[in-house]
Length: 443
Ligand code: ATP
Ligand code: MG
Picture 1 (tube, rainbow, N blue to C red):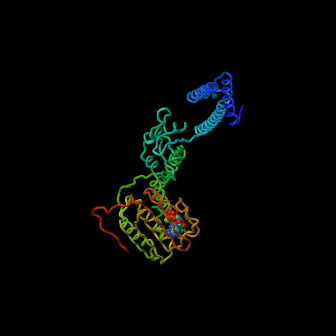
Picture 2: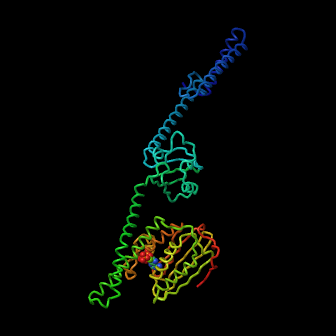
Picture 3: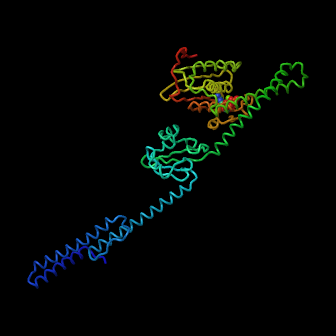
């Protein structure tokens, strides 16, 4: 039964008064009052003891002790609080278990670590994909279990916009895509996806294109060799054969160019024969490429401007860089009408090195720009049928830049000319190699 506080106070006063009155009848009013007070004190102490033991009983899932009066009311209140706490705890526990069960059922590996990489929780798939062990690995550093420098660099970078590809440390045949998200107090949620099948398909595609291109090269060389001989002796051929032979020779050389580009692309993709540590003199490279481009320009008489700024030395593969620069400069020649200007410039700033190829040509509609580096993509092919390109040039440029940690920026508009800028990170810029000629020119 629940009474108000003043009622309890009145009951205590009434009890003490009753003890006083009994004492008065017996001739000891003060002693009667004292006995009442002492009795009340003893009863209160007994109740406090019950409460103390209940509170300190480990795992006290039981109900609070029973009593009457004020103490009974206090115990009932505590009981209600305790029950509602147990209820909330059970509900939260059920929710946590449900979330854990659902993440456990996921095919992707999920791992939670703190900011330093200490393992806190992971699901069953993470155990399979990354070889974590439930009993012994909790509290370990994730870097001790995934011993890949690329993973450590990715974890520490805090820039998780792009996922990381990795072979599983426990099962090397499994190819993983790792994505990290930050949550809570700088904690990390790591999701590992098994992309082995996609990876194998991509590998098969690469191998297929590479092999087919290689296999086609030999017969094509024979065909175009004979065609060239026929073209050289065109005068001796019947008149009706001259045009078809010319066209066949043209198309054969186009196909040869296509196959050379495809082989180059597959080499770039696999990083085969890449000499990434060489120091390339961009000044000399740009000058040579522009010299070839002048020859290509021929009667179109383009005006070339070369500006080589400070530190034109890049750590990277010279032949790959030559392909990229010549693709950009030859594009400028192809897509700039006669008499136009082409400017090639190298500059550096705090962000890194920038190689710009700018022309005053026909330009590109901005809708095409995001797709230009796709293989075989040509902006409006009908517009420049006569240029005969294959649309692989910028794909090659993109892959060369990927291999050199660079990025391609394209600024263009129809009729306003185009600028292609290759941005290289600062770490790629090298010092002038000992013994190289000092060059820094404006032509
Ligand atoms: P390839 O270089 O393989 O012989 P391509 O020049 O057509 O063929 P890319 O170099 O990849 O192919 O260029 C893709 C498309 O981008 C081109 O077809 C062209 O439409 C456009 N493009 C590239 N460079 C320029 C430029 N400087 N000015 C205008 N359009 C350009
Ligand atoms: Mg091109």
